[in-house]
Length: 352
Ligand code: 3PG
Ligand code: MG
Image 1 (spheres, rainbow, N blue to C red):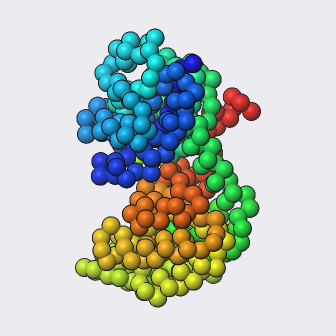
Image 2: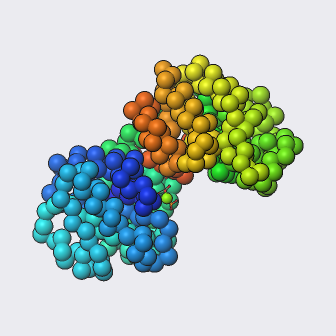
């Protein structure tokens, strides 16, 4: 049997060797390649407008091959020519960036049919793109029997625990640059949580809403009314001191850090999305590192997600101390906000 497998190889050039997504994709591939004669992998990378060689999957495939310990052939060029190269053959193949093909983002049925012609069954193992409706993850399910893969299954098991009945006290930590994409999650989880700790640009928006002079720091002007309502809830805590450079708040300060650490240490469930400071630039990694270390040393069910947050955790060497790291950024946020993810719905509709 031959499978078409959707994986997430959407990683920045600087992250290729350390990426959680590639590590997970490699593990999935090792498992799936025991079951199928031929696997053709579909993935996008970045947000190209047509072909953009900087966003080729070629360098990512080299890393995937190393980590999966499987020989992988790269398929480039028109789809009919790629198909000729695999028909009648066994092995593992990766097709060039799905977003190089016209119609991918519009969920084109004809592109989906072409993707489907590469196998007899479709396995979706890309949780991180499940909030997008594309030919390679939604359209294709109209043409092939379609199932969840192991990564998607694991993601859903972990994230459903948060949605259903998180052990209390439950602490939600929200950082990163924007409040707009995190607000639906905060709203959805507020009644289940005991504390919501803010940092990063999200914390700055809360501070600005409270009348604090945030100088030249990033914050979202359009969100000030929402932020004001949010900080009216005593569960929502925002920074009380900061590390500042060139008129910009770049990290939470030591008092905030120690208050956050105390709350985390008393928690039974922690969900973390978004670094609380500019962690990639020393010394502004201190707040994010203390949050990461507090979660790692607390006996709780802990989930972190989003590229920056998981990269920070991996860089601090704390990956194994978390219950689960999600490969999803936007997809994790939408799932935790209670939204339905189209690529998972497409699988469910068929198999309910
Ligand atoms: C992500 O990076 O969150 C996923 O790969 C989806 O990518 P997109 O936001 O470019 O659709
Ligand atoms: Mg991306």
